[in-house]
Amino acid sequence: MRDALLAVGTRKGLFLARSTGGGPFEVEPVRFSTIGVPSVAIDTRGPAPRLLAGIEYGHFGPSVMWSDDLGATWQEADKPPIAFPEETGAALARVWQLTPSPSEPDVVWAGTEPGALFRSEDRGATYSLVDGLWNHPHRAEWQPGGGGLCMHTVLPHPTDPKTVGVAVSTGGFYRSTDGGASWEAANQGIRAPFMPEGSQYPEFGQCVHKVAGHPARPERLFLQHHFGVYRSDDFGGSWTSIGDSLPSDFGFPIAVHPDRPDTIYVFPLQADMDRTPVDHRCRVYRSDDAGGSWQALSDGLPKDAVHASVLRDAMCASPAGVFFGTRDGEVYGSRDDGESWFTVARHLPDVLTVRAALL
Image (cartoon, rainbow, N blue to C red; front, side):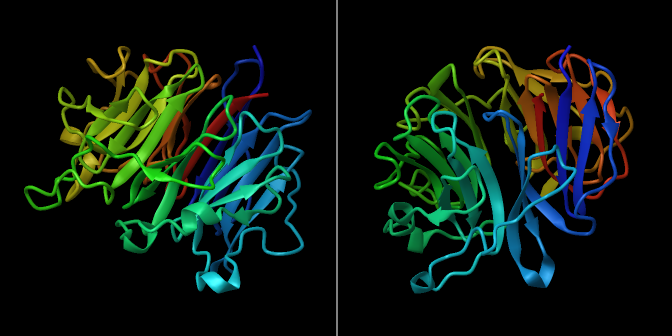
């Protein structure tokens, strides 16, 4: 079996874990100790993997660093890699998302707080603001969610570089078909239960928590909302609820199986005012029929009461396995699609993001 790399960004550093030939994951010493790492990407498109990390330097501000030797050494651009133009009057607060483009070899997208999209054409070293989205008339009306006004999802089309989707809390889902020059809100069918009756299906303003898709079926997207789990079969043109049979449709992450585009994973929480696992049991829920039905997966997960949640980017499904990390620093993995789980790490800081890849 091929070697695997797991990257875990936490509130106090980056942890890399490696598996050799299908063996157990060994967690390496912390990188960027005491520094928040809210976004990570493992870019396997080039001749050698590149790791990207969105880091928070405290009073020095956020930045993006990269490593071409699997984390042994790190580099940073000579100038701030992500910076708002002076005329915007905005300042970068956090890099929420780093997403390599599957159709453009050197392009990496970055989603930030305040809600904005940046594009890199040098594999993530430096970035420029996507003006078309920043100048969209809706943007001035977007309101921050509990975690801030964050662009947490970037979904570039797997074969068409002109098509890309993004999600911002609490703006909703937006899509572009001209490379980011123009954008349209794509939230039809997503209910915003926190809005007054009669106004619960707005054009924008939905508190989208995460959106995921699969390259084999790019028109199909899955969305975890503040309340609700949805599917779109037309790249966000319309959305249908698929969360009615879950024990709760509130949660943060949603992930799609790397080989089966109809298989998805969520981690339901009690409610927005009680962000703990349903019944205080640690369970991942999987659907194998695009949300038609769900089953709880807990073999190998804690049996006693669990009160820690899983954040929106703290779950991933990759050829290396399915992984998630919790807010109390536990990281779990599965190599059999979630049927059974093993412990990767315990007692880490608050887990913010999890990414995995085969090397």
